[in-house]
Length: 326
Image (tube, rainbow, N blue to C red; front, side, top):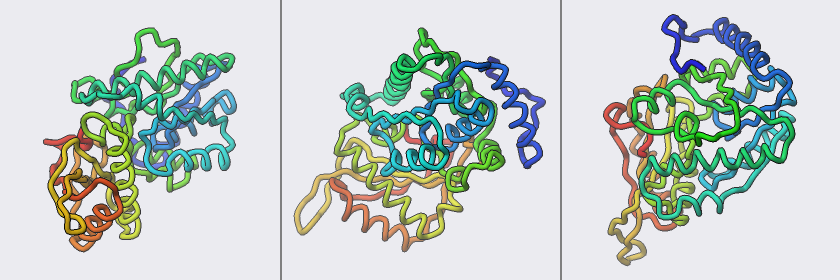
């Protein structure tokens, strides 16, 4: 399929354009899929959820959603996906806990691009195995969006859904939102009837916390990322910032800093907070966080997260930095 966004394509800025896009994509999906079955990687994020809704609208029960717990998801994420898609939406949902499998593959891997490719390839391997258990699976649905393609083509970073795929992949790809920016995907999701809690969910990278546990992934440091992220999300929601800040998360680097805990010297990890605003993910500005909230975050993270003794805030816009650290 053509990888370029048509120059003449108008931005989807209103409900009418979103409805037109949905109508066109449903028709194209039906034409492409026919009576075959589609296997979709369903993380529960905005992109994969909108793709799931589009595919479901077009082909119904021919869609099989696969949720893989890679061990790199946010706290409580798998439980939420199961509740929304299996219990509420009655989708064909296959749940796989592949935590050990992914973390074993990533053992001693430091380079971020290598990590991304390993995670992407392992996703495809998992899907291939699931496809082998089902009859008639010919297509692989993906939540690729336009910024993913741009960043992969320009060599900024690889994406599991637009780069690093095995050459012998046996699936044909279905990527119905591949020419959309993130704000357009959200509008399409609303018109498809997805709940606001899902449509407004902040972006989450395909490799998950694997690119927020910087350098070699260690299980204890990975838990520090997960727990500090949960605290950040909880406090932002209490402060109402979850409705005004586009993306916010924590990263934990692979070095330690000297500190003092309980009157004794500690040598533990720092947590870095990142909070940015963006419309299309191509540029981003840094959000100003109230100082009293920052103090509360520091207190909670250094007290409640094991192995952490320092909290930092990233003030770098995009450009020069990317939104994610790796």
